[in-house]
Image (cartoon, rainbow, N blue to C red; front, side, top):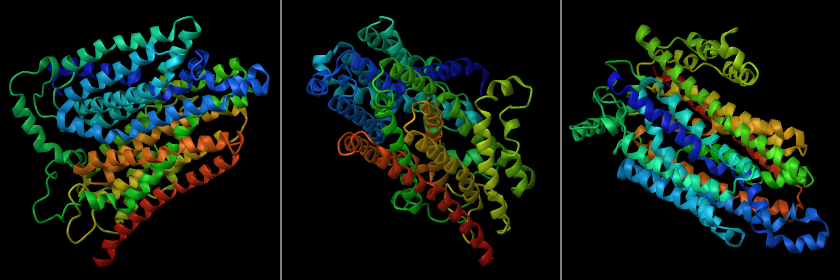
Length: 568
């Protein structure tokens, strides 16, 4: 990284972080906004009949028809958030950064202006505004993720940090709710968000590239304020290297490009989509994501039932949920930090010995996890994280220590880790040891995410109001691990040239599954009469099914690692 462009790159990083934190994922603070909408009497006319029948003031608090409207709006908006990843990714790839960001600004500004100027009488416009807000936000995130390419070996950490900021931005609606309770109108808050579009436009032209930020970064790369002549040449240089980005991340020097004749045919996009690996990953993502969306979309109704319509208590728990969402930014980088450390360890061992050593590498990474994260006893970081971070780190260590080292599997083959043929196909005559190591390293992350979701699901299923504080904590940690683990697995398990298409496809298909949240909500409110016990049991069983994914990946890795030994 050249010192000349460092201030610009740091400015791009920090402003991108602020953009993701303040705007990109505000949709997932929906529970706070629903509280304000109810105070503003949105869809309240649907409750009049129920209120007369019940004959008391609390009839409005648990209005079935009103809750259904809000649940349907969130279902549609969250569906668009995922499903539109595929077409917006195509727009970003085809028309580059500037065009994609201008579309995002248009959608986001239009959405905030619609919300600012609607009233209870025109509340149906929320069905238009919230999906627009969601798609604009995901485009902001998508165009900012490439900023990680500016910082080399810290790329994974920055990408997961941005994903965490996306999760934490749900706290924006909490701020709007608190301001509303202090007398600041909903219209004033959303007009302010609309005016911030001026800042988005300025950042688009001054601190972001017109095209894509390549990886690896070419020498003397410039963009934004520092861009000058020679841009086209730099773009050509970048495009010629894009297909090798994953290989260059893991390979030591002089081993990045295998010779011709060493490799099998590259894996096609069709074969990747119809593979068992992709199918189980889709199940893993869809089930866990459905839990999160259903919980967020129905939280206001859940708290209303558990608090017996007490507005003050509902407001207190809604605030607690939104505050825990803010800490998603602190949870998400743990996965990225582990990946960066793991990658550096592999490279160091490969340079020194030409192969990975079994228990040494695995235990150094996960057994000495506190030292990797700077959590040495007595240090300021240790004191800061000892209360909330240590239990999670202990869980990570336990899962990783119980899982066999990927290098133990490789020992049987007699081959060292000479470079990830995962990207270009296995070497003829034997299985790719690098792909086995990479996939095996992803197994603990997949299993830990499923475990966190299971804990979150069980807590959410218990109808005890104070227990929901624990549910909020597990939910934000699980969600932070989910999306970082999803992207990481697709990167490791499939060819890099198909990553964009596979990522967009898996998000789009999981979005279709997420539509189930509305009929589930209708079932709870209707036939089950506000008793979600049987639905929760079914979803917990479905969560147990997600553990099949890491188990099958592990068995596949073991099979591939032991196959060469049989034929050698």
